[in-house]
Image (cartoon, rainbow, N blue to C red; front, side, top):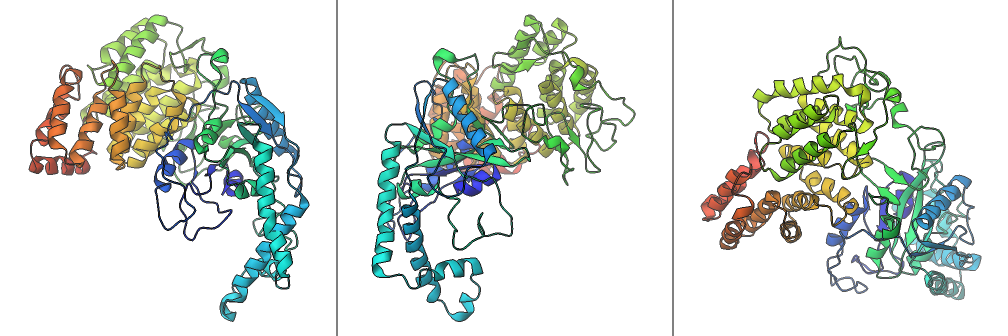
Length: 630
């Protein structure tokens, strides 16, 4: 699973042996999640690691805080393994990407030391002999017609075990223990060991293995095999790309039973003494791409081996990516950035002239409180925009007055106009659509001096205004890839995930960015409120309640979290407890809040099972037209 993950540019976790029950159990087994994000893998492990008595090798179930993925790199002891001791040589581009990842860790305060090879040719040859014998026993027991369906490569390989003696098979099997002892001893001085996942980035699709040679079938697993035998947790994450655009996998291996520590190293941040203001994600992996050592550059730009997705052929469906328009009729750019003249493009008028190239845009000299670039130099305008953001997240009063104040403070700033449009669109009222489009038209006139992030927000909101809610959410997701603390993008995507009934992204979209948010961020409770609701909509009631209670535990007023916990209690039939909680939380939601009417309704629903049944039906059948969250 780590090998296909490395070759496909996704994340995979092989947990400690026994963490995921398997039947029938066997030594060296590999089972675990393959996901697009580390956070998604953590969520899957919460389900996959449930107890099952049929697996006699399984570990006792543990309540592991899998979502607490942040870990400082300062002082982390890391072993760097670049030579497996046998097998295919590591390709130069793979070696360079892994070394760059090691340097990133070291720059963040980790202690990186090389590891000498600990595997021997005798180990793999012995394991190969044992597996050939076992394979031949299975194949030879098949009826002739089924044996004929076995891949010839596998048949020829297994036939090599047909005439092995008992002594040869036993000696081969004993190499499993030797391999385990060697791997554990090599890793003992370190917190984690990093290495290439695979020595090669690809091989011919028609081949069954990178060597295409039954006599040498295992030469590509030199880095992964020992940790299967040693039962240690081991993950693979993309750490860069070759000049041809192929992903490169980095393997991170921890100590047995420390699965969480292994995952935390994947998303390690700067040490507190080195923090630059927003925290550094060393190997951050996201839904549509990766930012990692060896790939921290502008795609397609000078010195960057990562391919520019904008150079790829058009996809069948519309796509918006970082200010890029790709309509069904073919690919187009916004005039080297923003001048799409296609009449099929998200309602944009065909007679509009292209905007200046993004290369002529002036660099912003300011960031917001979450280190997102903004196209204003006015602190007053930025403060009004921050207040508007809080109102949108908390539902306390409408943000229009604050948006207008931001525009008045800096008439040339693009983002407040996009904020106005996006807020109006989230109300899903047809009568407001013209006002939203007018705000987008005004924003478009200011695009020349706007940073790429704000132009991407314009593209997402324009899709939304054209009725393409799916495309808008995909565009907001692209913004979150580059700016995981962009709460504008998350807030709007979360609402339209809800309107579209996309429960998976209600949970997953927030979970993907949550590790990037420090615990002391004043807006983090609102993020937790969204996460709680997403968990509840996916049926994870215990987790949803815990996260919702955490969101409401401080001074922040988070009606979204109150709402999520109310849903949990209704779904579990805890009507009296739900009424009591809403009553106790009333000062946090009942006055001056857009959620108030809906939460009053939930309180009424909790008075009887009949009303509760109506609430459940209403929340699942009328979300698309709801002007406020339900």
